[in-house]
Length: 277
Ligand SMILES: Nc1ncnc2c1ncn2[C@@H]1O[C@H](COP(=O)(O)OP(=O)(O)OP(=O)(O)O)[C@@H](O)[C@H]1O
Ligand SMILES: [Mg+2]
Image (cartoon, rainbow, N blue to C red; front, top):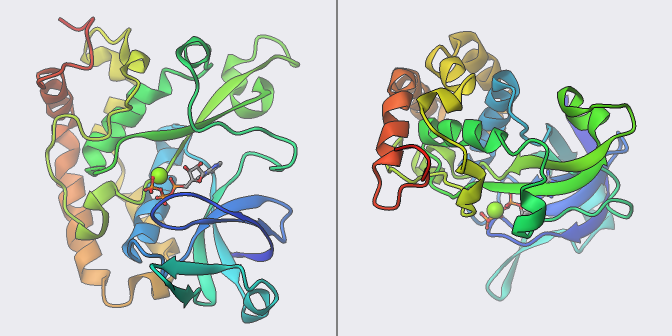
């Protein structure tokens, strides 16, 4: 079920020209519109990635369908897309929302952390699982995450030593370019999906260090794929149904190759895993 947008907070940077909107459920969402300048398919990619990450136990930002009504657009003329010097109106309907981790007037969300703070991120290990995921999903973009300080009990219960413990949390965002973006292709590329701060992989010593995620990917259930596809609004697909089916068949065949893809990553020109000899 979609949530309705009720207020524009601000435009975000980035090629998709996402907008931060407040919705009727009281949450805030970074919304990519179906007629964004990248491609309609990036919404499908984002949705599938969010469902898969949830299953894998990786910290993707929560996702929702955000409905933009014609009345909302009339009341918020600043909500539009800019293509060079021309304005493209946003289509009313359902769009992809990535949930902001709180009220943007109260929480500071960082796109990057300096090294000294990055090492303190409580769930830094999750970057390993994300690399396996990105290799599988053919993410043509490098890994992107946001960071914020929060009550661990709420965000990473397994990491909370006591109920009031606060720490830095990483949330994974921007899956518009899995499946090669609008190409819907699964290419092998040894360093695809790598996080540019390779210190997050510093303690990787073997393939074993990508567990439990590797195992979950290799045995990824067909049922989760079906569930994700069923939730996609028909307007996001319109004519793309066959292409999506073919892509997902290929993705399922690719599952068992992911351990080899990780090995190839290690053998890349610049091995991101210095401790894995
Ligand atoms: N769930 C989220 N919580 C907080 N901030 C977010 C979230 N999702 C996206 N953002 C912010 O919005 C920006 C744009 O989002 P995103 O990277 O997904 O869009 P994009 O247009 O695809 O970007 P790019 O040009 O890098 O491909 C991000 O750089 C990040 O700062
Ligand atoms: Mg981005």
